[in-house]
Length: 132
View 1 (tube, rainbow, N blue to C red):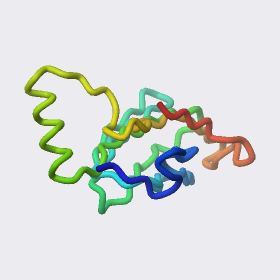
View 2: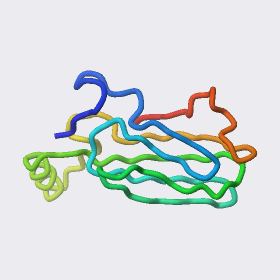
View 3: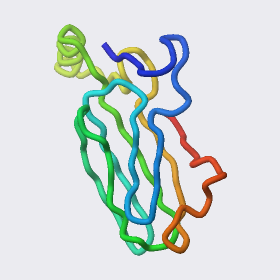
């Protein structure tokens, strides 16, 4: 089953991942147990990256160095035991859309950050994480 790295079953974490930004790289530090995470990152001048990382990898994306607003989405696949995987497979075969992880906690985090002069221009501001 899905097990959070922080928080309790009754309380979901405020963020699913922490964000570290410098002029050339953005790194996401997952705060929940997961099997994989898909990172979508868009930015100025048509910059767009979609990459998938396993549970044993640190999600990181090289930045083009362009100043401006960058938006990200982290879509986590839960870490499931065998029984949960079998239940999900049966639900898919039956045409049931479960929509979120089996424990009912959010699995998507969206946010933004801004670069100016090659550095994060708003370190004192929250990075606007939205969890769904």
